[in-house]
Length: 352
Image (cartoon, rainbow, N blue to C red):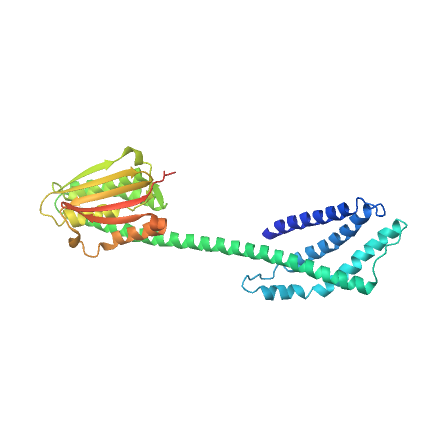
């Protein structure tokens, strides 16, 4: 089985020898003392023998570790073969040429053997240095690609693990608060508590479905918010009003699943629970060019009344950082009436 770098190497090798043979033939086209088959034989014999050595080199060194940081070690191991390569190369190509010339009834004339060995050895040394450098470059590039793919896979698994951990923290968090709400109502109104348990079941079903993916459509996140708001609205009857301002053109926008629920939960915890007067909550979503904005505003609180911001806000920011880096953010913006939690992220259409 060919290594990933071998296809590129063999392609370059074939092009190189086609060029060498073409040049050799071109140089002797107008030389009437040389037949066309002679330059073809000279270059073909060389290419045949060194190709055999190349195939052997690729097979024999396939388990050798190529370290871009230690090239001398790799070249040194390759250089140990050069004396054997030089002798077998020279003997083989001249044997082939003498044999073919003899079959053609001719004699192959060349320089004295000492001169031949010196000339061919120097030429082979330069040739080997060139191609070993090319092989090392291709192997190093292949090694870099493999390491890069491993690093990307590791980063992906790490990000998925971080997201799974963050979502695992969020789900028990809002589940505990929902059950606490139902427990408080059960003491005074069993029928209401039963109705809230049904709503909680729907909420859990939606959240479990959402937890199976990292990203989903905004419409699904809004549906989950409505279910949560329905449960909390039952607990704080008469103390909270909720307004939904979700633009039609962002319903299919892609958002991280279970990202917005902690923001709504904070609006209830810091706005409704701590206020002695009715509180209004407004959930908005709109698009501004290539940016998606989602905000949840609550009256009845200030940032100074939200020390530490809680696990929900911290996890939301960490998830945005893992998924989008610096391209997304979560801001808490106080105003004269209360606090707005605003999420800004790149606008993308959901495929879910």
